[in-house]
Length: 79
Image 1 (cartoon, rainbow, N blue to C red):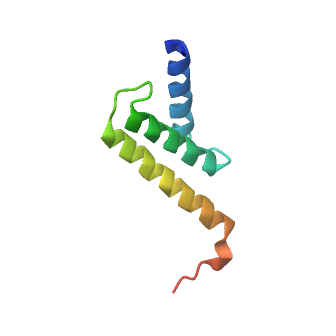
Image 2 (spheres, one colour):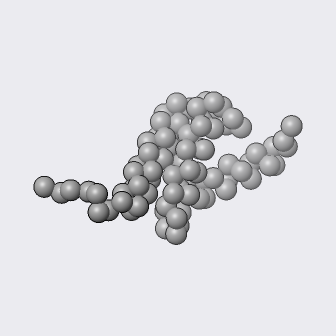
């Protein structure tokens, strides 16, 4: 069993990463947003909050799309 100090440190770390949108690898922000969403969805170390879970999952999806677009810009056709 983890102590509350470890839980708090992990949550603070995730939130700091999610808040720092200027990270070099935007994919890391997406993963962090997903992790935060999962924590709120399942009530892992936090109160279950479906609105917060949804918001974090939505941001995670956005960062995933951005990351994929950065990988394959030549396949995008703009009319």
